[in-house]
Length: 340
Image (cartoon, rainbow, N blue to C red; front, side):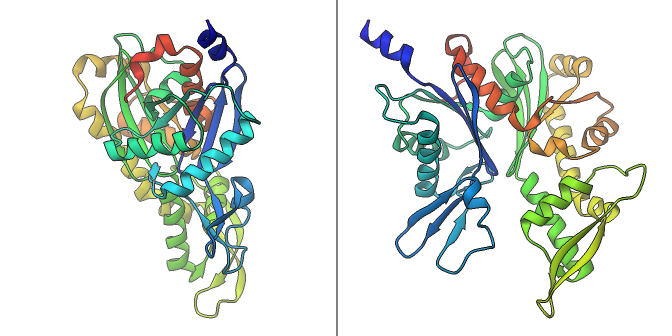
């Protein structure tokens, strides 16, 4: 009876621990946190100075005595200690105070995550104060968040384009039937824009500026009217800051390789998909989730390359955490989706 009472008051959580952003869903309340996965530390004594938005705002604007770190790379933990501190900070801001019961935590992770990487996620969450920790694959979470019938014997294809990885998966009856994960996503797109501008304009821009260029004039297919954007960078030869214009055509050229890698990964998953499930996908189409799904024209490009309808989730940035949240709301029903 006491255990049931404590579980009733427990603040159980779901988390999308992403390369670019971390989102947390609180059972009964919905999404309560959406912060960049960034930590600022002082290397001399390893003191944490800022986490989330505060740390991201410090990128490139601090002295030598401060370092800003993104502790996740390609969707998995690259710096265990910093990730643990980041998760603990985020959980503390959500839970606000000492808990009588350590909360259950559902964490969405990339498909194909190794046993070592699973252990790192679980240990980081345990150190941060979570109790029972359950893992589910990101495409499964995205499919649930998009409202697809993951429990039915019918195929659904989800393409989750995050910051570090693109996950393509065919889902049926609470399981991933076949999948592929490529380390080409939002971060690689930003880096492609930076490389292009350095080569064509002989200018250096920050990753944050590259991301703004991608958001404002980036596209996978041409616009009806040409666009251009004034940006600020510094000359490679002199280091002097200058303003210059970037066109949508050259950004599209920079993004051609990353977008093509995503399209090819979708085609490879179709090659592995059983005919019965492929027939379902033909009827239902492909679902896009993750921040990369917001790239203008990407859905049309995939439609052109596959000949299938492509749907973009109503809020692709939160699809994974919404799906993980639905799981924490009804763990008994969704128990088959856990991978640990």
